[in-house]
Amino acid sequence: MVHSGGPPVTGRSPAENAQLALLLEVAGTPKPGNVDRERDLPDLRFEHFLAGAVGAGEGIRAAEAGAPVGEAFETAVARMSDQSGGNTQFGALLLLVPLVRAGAEGELSRDGVRAVVEATTVADAAAFYRAFEHVDVRVDEPAPDVDAPDVRRGADAVPDLRERDLTLFDVLAESAEVDGVAREWVGGFERTFSVAEAVAAGDGPVSDRAARAFLDQLAAEPDTHVAKQHGGGVARNVMVRAQEARDGNDPALVDAFAEALVGEGINPGTTADVVAAGLFVALERGVTV
Picture 1 (cartoon, rainbow, N blue to C red):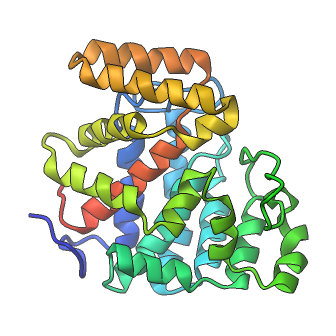
Picture 2 (cartoon, rainbow, N blue to C red; picture 1 turned 135 degrees about the vertical axis):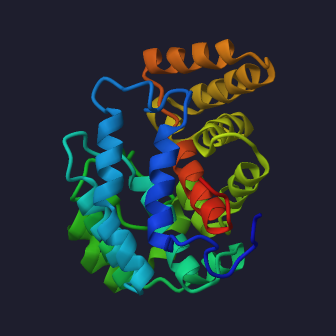
């Protein structure tokens, strides 16, 4: 049974479901180009994601308890990074923290999470910038028309944020055209709730449903992390290849696609972030494991 909102329908708290979502996301396989329970990347392993999910719990629980979004996010990132692999779930946590807050408030809907992110403050933005000092996150040179300070400045950008009165929502709105996680924030978490519906409608182990949702999302639109790493043309090519692998109805095709992306060093990380967020919503709405 799946519920549309309100309190969780299992004994787990929203924070516990968020950590479970992180674990289920990385356990799904095959997840082309990403770490999963059968594939490691050269410098990033399955165990790093498990440790990151455990470490992030402190910040996730803070979000559940009512801490400011930025503060909870920074704490989650700092503790997530307490493993030797580096950045494992930065983008996923940026989505999960406001979702956990909405869930804790009994308002886990697109309108409910929209209200959370639109209420963020300059202090939340400052904590977001400080989070970049805890872990190495791939960030490109900002586009000329982006008004927000360069996140690579970290805490050094905080006085600028305060002077310009930029909230965390304002900052992410500046990146929404080129960053899929930021787009979720300013667009009402559309893909997140779509993934939740797909997971709820599926059958079999939830980690397998997560892998199917990952492939469907990768086939639906270019992954912005791939675009940042390799350019828009490669991101669109990956999307087409995902469509072909999915539509071939042959698990061997998906496995071959997964191996190929790993070999090419192509990592659709934004898609994984959205799937983790969608898994959280599905769990909160009653999907059982």
